[in-house]
Image (cartoon, rainbow, N blue to C red; front, side, top):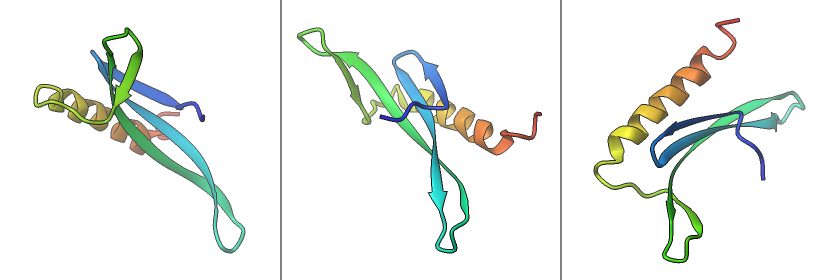
Length: 80
């Protein structure tokens, strides 16, 4: 599994940013980015679980983390 290039965390919620290589029809190469929001919890057996559904109180956290990931991606390279 690919490793995220950046991860934003707030409590039990996180958003991971992934970079993926792409190739166009004419052979040019580039990069595509995606984000994955997740919630972490432990099940009754104590096993780590990750889900992509969120309760009403988690929505503000995910919104904030998605905003941070958007800013990271849109400002990427402009700070250098």
